[in-house]
Amino acid sequence: MQLPYSEELNIGQLSRLFDNTTNCYKFFWFQAIIRKLDGKHKSFSFDELINEMIADAWYMVTEYHLRLGPLGITDNLEEVVKYIYDKYDFRSSEKRVKIIEFLQSTKDKKIIKYKKDLTLNVPYRLQVPFYDEIKIDRKVWYGSKKTLTDEINRQRRLMYYFVYVSGLSTIIEVDETWAEYLYKNKEILKGWTQLKLIHYLQNKNPSVPGIADKIEPPVERNIERVRKY
Image 1 (tube, rainbow, N blue to C red):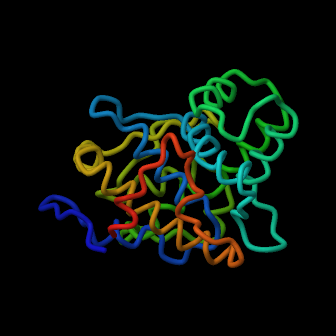
Image 2 (spheres, one colour):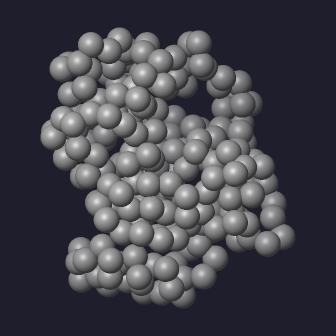
């Protein structure tokens, strides 16, 4: 599928966002950014985005028990959804606004640990297709997050930059030109991301039919764009 053209941006790099995807986090992280962009705000904390990821994964995990990671490997996004569902009084069809409100206020240390673990790699690795001016070695990848983000911020024309680094309070700011493009093409990009996610989930859940009908609750479902693609 060809993404909407832009004279100012390298859409080829964007189209490679999900190349070499070994777990689900990239899909949910990018989708969270798309969700949060509203034409006005373009700075978001890790905590805000992780909350969106958990809410997006909620229905498919609790209602249909879809596996989000490779067989035999613990997937933190899947596990935190299961943990909340088992311990707290939420339905599989719970409104996402209620899930978000809970996640914003919870003091549950186990949930907070899950959320921190979800930020270990994907915020930094999502934009690897854009890193054509910097080279990050293994020592930097697994060292201080401040050192890593300083190196990443040297790259020009990224989708987003790190403006404050402090655990779940870390803040990213979407580049103004990218924010305009992503917001303008929000529905197309969400459909593209869901299509990629569906292919990923089909691979991880080969015995489950109709994956496309299981990623969102029926009242919110709008997968016609995915079927069309």
